[in-house]
Length: 108
Image (cartoon, rainbow, N blue to C red):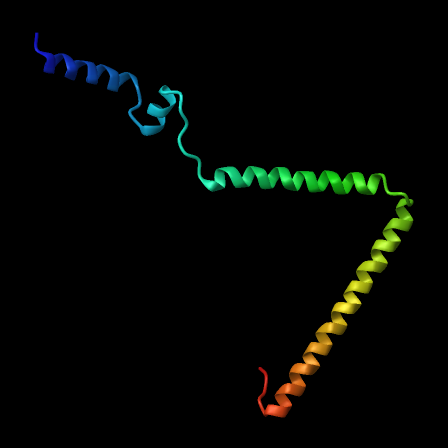
C-alpha cells in the first residue's frame, strides 16, 4: 500500500467536499474567527441610540406637565440658548477685533 497515494487521495476528496478557508476550518472545529472592533461597536451604538430614543419618548410621555406647556418651555429654553450663544459669539468677535486693532493685524 502506497501511503503517499492514499494521503493525496484523502486530501483531494476532503478538499472537494469542504471549503479550505480559515473561517470554514474554525467553524468545523467549533470556534469563531476573531471579530473586528467595528463588528462589536456598531451594534452597541445602535442599541444605545434606540435606548436614548425610547427613554426620551417615555420621558415626554410621562412628563408632569401637559404637552402644550412642555413644548412652550422647550421653545423658550431653546430661544434663550440661541440668544446667549449669539451674545457670546458677538463678544468673542469684538474681543478679536479689538485685539487685532491693537496689534495692527487684519482678519480675512
